[in-house]
Image (cartoon, rainbow, N blue to C red; front, top):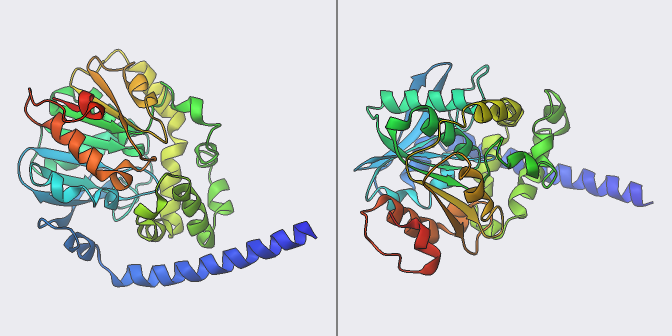
Length: 329
């Protein structure tokens, strides 16, 4: 009886999810990327730039020193939408879709974080910039690290958000959230188990476990990962974890010299982020984002903006609150 009822419920949920995603897919086809940029204040525009093995999609706006934003999984550049207008008041903001994700084209390989960093760097150069600051969250932080490590004269300041580093603590959490192991499984295991109609269920579970899931534009990301090839590209970043561990540990002697702000969420990785990146950097400031789950830019954007404005701002400006003490330049 219990098994039959469970199968029935799963079938009903799957059917509802399929209908919802069909509707979302129709909305996605009707809304071009330019329309989403138009929803941001500050004159943001979309563009693409060809790099080795792929074409990167980016959203750019503002003026001032260049600031590169790198999103995490399962998200796109839209992760930063709540903070981009304010950041653009002081910076030229460039928010990339990682290769294979969002509106960037899907490469045939090279999802390890060092090669991904090289592709992002090539895109930055082709847009006319060389020395940048970077904010990376989740997978984006794992990409930001080799960018700063391998090209240290080109990164002024680095912000990494809510992930420890592969080879320096991330692997200790594989058993905490099952998606960390599931997404690493060889192709086509996750691709076969998670079909199109499962997208909203799987990603909705991911977002639903955070502090404030209602603050995340979940439907935007359901649409982004609804195509099977986009989900598969996302898994490839996880399948590259083993290579990332080898690469990071082999290059750990290239210690980061630039200031690094390592921010963990109070209800996610917390101080673990600072402890992890302190193993590879000499000027790492650990910060805990209060009252936030994993998706800090959406769950507590005010704290993020207050913190990074201090970090990227002039030296000598005191922190207005104790929780911002390690954010000062």
